[in-house]
Amino acid sequence: MLEIVALTIDWPDFSCRYDLTVPKGALCVLIGPSGGGKTTLINAIAGFGRRPNGCLLLDGQDLLALEPAQRPLSILFQEHNLFPHLTAEQNVGLGLHPGLHLNNQQREVVGYALASVGLADMGSRYPAELSGGQRQRVALARAMIRNKPLMLLDEPFAALDPVRRRGMIHQVDKLRREQAITVLMSIHTPEEIEDIADMIVTIAEGRVQTIRHPPAQETISENGAPEL
Image (cartoon, rainbow, N blue to C red; front, top):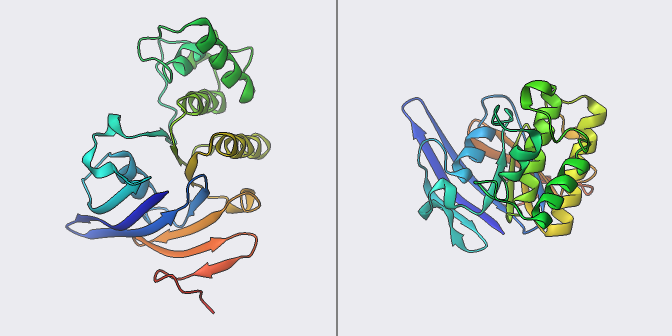
């Protein structure tokens, strides 16, 4: 379970405060206007940017006490963040070993991950030889094989066409169901994910404004009471 209680980040001209509980294994979608605070929340959970105050727990573990590299999570940004001098296969392999010292079983896992995102025949290509959407799928494959209990995705599929984007959303959904991974995903096209999301959270002005639980479409206010 991801517990976010009074998680506060202050700037001279703006402040964010988040209160949100996401059950273990749930797919939680973050929506809202640009600049409303979705990416700020994702960065705070990952440990990037200005240090927040408040409570941030994952399965009872205090994430605020950990450095970013120590936090048990994977993250995929809008930018793919691939290493240009490494092949697609090697970039994915970094998710298993930073020195790329992989055994045969691990290499099979890398191959399966690439195949699952539709890139089975492109493992030997370098990022410059791939399209923007293909590079993003390589980054997704790398995040998938890290097998961490929490996955954060910040507009991960914006570069993909609608058909491919839908396919990747279903791939993330399949992964989190198989491995009981909790997923937080920001997206500007909530209609593409409403049928599989457990929670749809609207964030604006640095606050959690509403929470919906499809398909019941029940809207909950910040204090936990259903809105009528």
